[in-house]
Length: 422
Image (cartoon, rainbow, N blue to C red; front, side):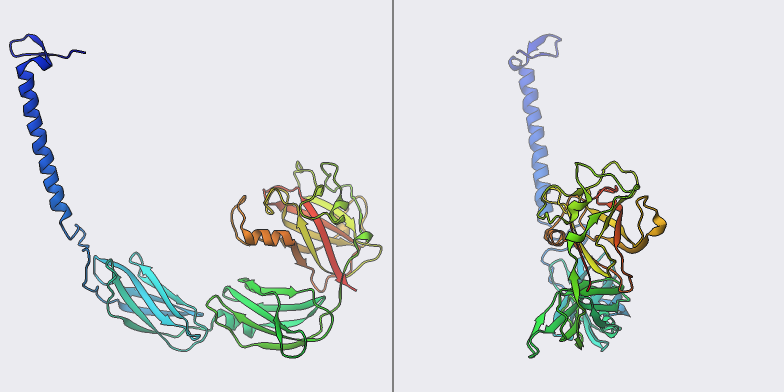
């Protein structure tokens, strides 16, 4: 394709053939060359600069100033430090260095966007020295400013002071108070052979303010038990020793269970029945108890646990896994358990007593559709709930599902085991 241009004499010529065009092109190229050279020169000057407009220096070997005006607020097992940052534009962070009573060395960092730092992990109320250091972007540290802290009583010590243990059906009941909701571990041990050779039982991990839990599956024989409390910094309390004889507990014979369908119970789906809860199908086998998905009110199912009332101790609920997920679809999340000894087919609620309010807690706290190994382990083991020790004997049980894991009411139950005193 030919490109035309107009010359000074007003005539049109092909650009490549006209001397004026060639001259113009050469002139423009010279201009571009000057511009590019100028840009490269400026870039070179900029890149050689050792300090940016904010005053931050590369390879700055000068230590920043000291942290000042430190205020200490002692807390339970911790201390909150408030301070004034040094006026150094190259400052990167503040670092606290200290040693716990168990010999563990701790280091905590705080950015320059805050003037506070919390030091944690103290198990006693003695004085401890904390070193505060300012560090710049070249990782050059200032001299240390020593600060004394005197933490208040730690959460594990408060839990230990309130620790109570007693016999319960099939095991030991453990109670305590955790006023500041610290993350604590109650470690139970048993002298199984009465020879001082202690064995570990299942640890109790909790941050609940009121601790009330049980260790189950123990034989009704007196044993020596030991209990201490630990935190995530591996601090430990003294040890509580107690001789305890667990009460006898039996797993109810599910051959005595029978459906007791009430008029106001929820209809079943896919030809499933209430009886499928105790037919022993595990590992996500089909079918299972599966109520109507379209129910717009809380789901209820009812059954008899035998010809005579029994004193219940606990039950384990195994829900149906949807694909690889336990906390999904019709798996009950919040539900209530009712008991009765004079139930009628009309489902009259005045003849029922609420004996438990239950909530399934997802260990990971991950959102719907996401589960980790801890979630899978808890789901495959089933969810166990203890009946209160003052719960009277009952013959009939009823579950009312208030919410499943997708926010509706229908339920999928794979298996149900119930224990009682003999």
